[in-house]
Length: 437
Image 1 (cartoon, rainbow, N blue to C red):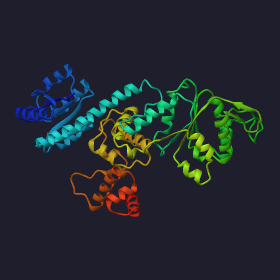
Image 2 (image 1 turned 90 degrees about the vertical axis):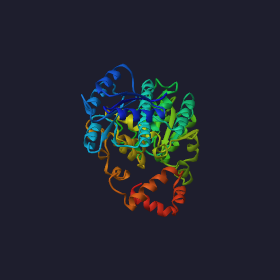
Image 3 (image 1 turned 60 degrees about the horizontal axis):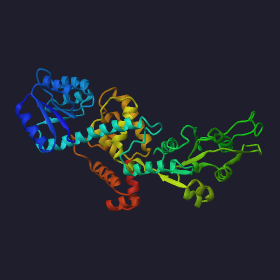
Image 4 (image 1 turned 180 degrees about the vertical axis):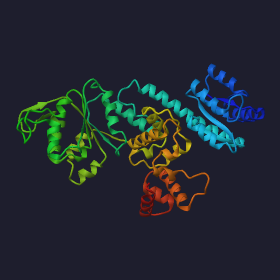
């Protein structure tokens, strides 16, 4: 459906020309000379976008913004401001306006600008719908995605959830491996049973086997009583072994035996125990390379690798960055909007820490913005250089940095990026290091 726009300006010629330009591109425009009449219309019918002039009578655009946001908090508001009133427009953005458009403007510029505003509005509406759907599904709230690749992975996870087959989830740190494991558990018949997580890097080598399989009294110094392990705690449910590539060889043997026979002995005991546990493992390492290097058992690798899922890094799912940014904003209780230049910086960033890093950046921004629209200066310093200031020309280094960022987003890998740029991979590596990309 076409977007509905509430256009308010106390100049008749502006209403006419802007209305004609926007209707020509498919928008439904309702125009008012009097802002009080516009408020009455807003009480009676829904609008997607509010396009308000800043200087009006009997109330100005700032007051109209306040009233409109109270009546229709989901309305995306843009202020039109004459030259010399930019400071007031920026202040309005702090009160909840999405952006401002400076007069005079070309009609083609207006049409392109409103298209971008509507994209933002639709994305927020889609996020609200997704959150409503996901709120009924425990455990998968942060698997919010527009990416077709991620949707295929989620569908695969749902398909294997009903079986007891082992799943190996690969991906960089922060890509959501544990969330996917939760999804598999929640979609399975084990959903009412425990979901137990073990971080294999968080325990010393001599304690990991005891943590997984338990120990008997006197098994080692300090073992003053029998203790059940995580496998026993997960009986009937799912155990998630995070960073499986870090477990030492003796524990690999014990884990292989469990996967083969569903049985184990506690450390220091000879009595065999059996439990019904589904194993999901995760790693940010290349396990095949670890097998080739002789540090990970090949037979264990193939037992874990019955179904292999590889989660893409955030830099390969750029379409999810706006959706996830607003998701985390809502999750953190933020009511702010996100300024366009902030979103541009978020989409230009390399995200080495992936989705987890994005959540941390949004948490910082929510705290610093204090209820205002999130601006570029609310982000960490490394984001500042990713959006060139409009009031000055970029330096040669800034142009190079922006172009490399663009090519890295387009290319399928670093070799292709180097070929597109016309440089060798070693030079690209040095430039990525220089610009922290």
